[in-house]
Image (tube, rainbow, N blue to C red):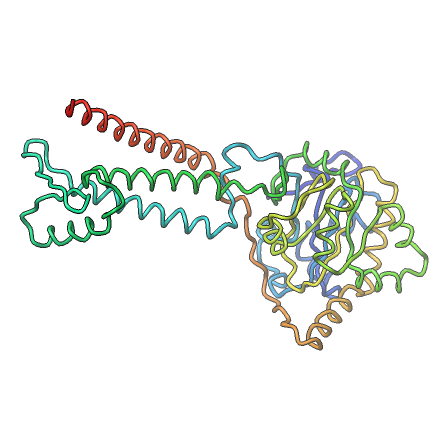
Length: 407
């Protein structure tokens, strides 16, 4: 992905949505060295420092540093330094069939496919060629018995007929067709319900798309955000001039370290927007008890490996507090306060006996990476329903013919 911005003279330097999410890192002492290697980030920080750039950062996201960021030779466009987020539209009919995090549903679909294929294979084995004589069937314990010359085939048929005893009184071929019909209907049910996760109503989270219209709309909607209270304490200790206190009052920044409280506040307080990590988003997407309440947007950001908590400033478009916030954030970075906070968090986790996450780069999962399979899955579901209807029609037609012969 590429980023450009315009200078005051009109030179095309940036061309893209102005709702930009920046991931900054812990080691502020190495910041200038890294930014000299990466011209894009160097220009970004320079514009923030000068307060005169046309580029406005409506959101800033901080995550702790990891060794992957120290690889100066890596391509900037392939690293998660800058991520653009947008508000996802309401899922379409095809997308509603897909739920990437439901691994159990995928497993159920695979098992159903195997069962359906096995049942269909058994049904095909029971059929004789058209030119051969029809099999002779006798009734034994309510189940049709097909004569077979092969000893192995007779043993298999006896086992199948024994398992079907008491289930139906039709010939074995009809029983197999009913099994195939049941498998088809079960498979269609899995497709229709297991993947139709509501994903918190009509809201979804996605990263790295570039849709200026939805981004501009999101920047107008967002008015309330969260900041970790422990990090807020550090900032307030450093905030001698009261800049952060004024920003908190203007931006309506909420603070909480309890994840459950933060999630539940979406429904109770009706916040306009919320930032969460990949892991928390997966838990929320799976939950059936949470609703959006009055929340208008839900955004997912790359997972913060040092968890607990992250910082997300969401500044409304055109807000007069934007320059003050950028200036304050720059002062915090230059003072190394965020680095001290992350180290304190790790020491606190070690003191409490908690597992401290490593410094490896988090996996960049793509929540909507399977979205291109939405319509094929919808067509497959329709095909399975059609096959099930055809199988049911065949069973009914065969039953009607049998009754006509008896008459």
